[in-house]
Each structure stands twice: as C-alpha cells, then as structure tokens.
Length: 111
Image 1 (cartoon, rainbow, N blue to C red):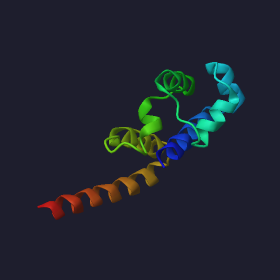
Image 2 (tube, one colour):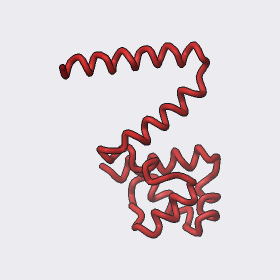
Image 3 (tube, rainbow, N blue to C red):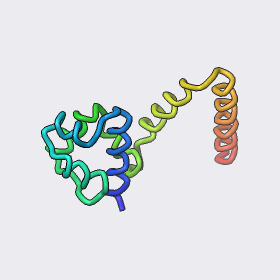
Image 4 (cartoon, rainbow, N blue to C red):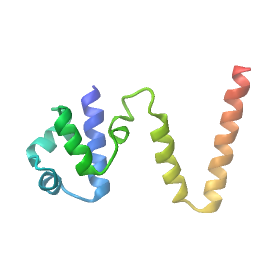
C-alpha cells in the first residue's frame, strides 16, 4: 500500500530531524494525532497539508515519494552519495569499485 511507504518516509524524515510528533505538530500547526495517522499510513495529506508537512520536515517531495515513484532515482542517488561520504576513504573506494563493476556488467548485458 502506497500510504504506508509514504508514512514510513515521513517518520524517517522526522526522526532524522530528531524531533517528536508533538514537536513537528508545533512546528507545522498540524496535530500530533494527524501526524501519527499519516506516519502509520492511515491518512494521506491533501496538497496544502502535504506542503506544510514537507516544509516542517525540511525535505523535498522526492524524500517522501522516492519509494513509490518510478522516476525518483536522482533523489536516491543523492541520498546514497551522502551515505557514501560518511564512510572511510577505504570503504568508499571498495563500494565505488563494486558499483562501477555492476555498471559495466549492465552495459555489457545490453550490448
């Protein structure tokens, strides 16, 4: 179900900010109960509330919809790039070598 994946992302973004549902409610003017229902996938915000929520979470729509949209690879690439940057140079090198190998294999398979 799409709403559950979106709700999970909303929760992850809120937790990444290090704030509670109550703090997000205070920041956005929404209720903690409403935020809870969104995070559990029981409710989906209409456009105006979605914008308020995104601004409160300090994220783009891609951050919330990346799991459900087919064309959100640029956000995922950016997210992975940030995670990669937090690793040691040796770990970064190993991971990049694996990714390069996988890209070469995909390219070879198409040719």
